[in-house]
Length: 304
Image: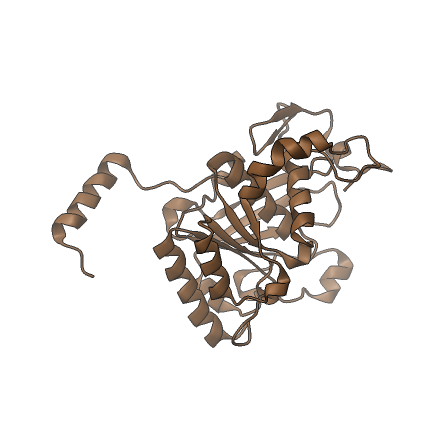
């Protein structure tokens, strides 16, 4: 339907007065400066196995829930059952593990205090449902969720080859329209092609580009936000590099990257301010640390 000129002028006047709309923020300043999340947008995340894609995604989901009140519909079969994924998210929230062998074990009181509101914001779809992407997105809409989360694309049921250019062109165009019309956000993890074996052996794996994704250029052509999670090495003391390689519309972010560290005891990411010797978490907590490198070294008996 074609809008009247008067409607368009009214909207332009509104933009002139109030500015372009802002996206929702995860809660870490260096990350939020590069990427925010629109209700009506799509974010595709890639990175090599064991380089932190799912870790970063769960941090984003937690931040959007705690900072912005988002509700998520989640399909993460590779991370375990709904209870297992929820236990990991609650570990992030409380800083306490479900492994009762450790001093920072979660208590029944912790679970009772946080579980009801927490569970309401995370609805899980198990792999036994074998849903196709469109059916999953519709289910998220029925649940009145703000986001639909797929980790990963290959685990969904598909009418065609999941990395076929023709199939991707159609399904991603449908996804973009669906999210825009229903004011939801799609998060999808995509696997890249395997890195060069020699680079893996030498410990010199370069970050994948958008053209290294399974399905290649269709993700870039039809995607809105594309994010790459990478590390210079798999060593625990190295920060995670979060690259934003594409942003559409542009006012929701910018091309760039940031470094995030992880506190394995709390299962949470933080920014490290070297001059102030301070680490800052996404959910409003700040803590002075002695040495961020040593904090990364897992000691015997510490939980992951």
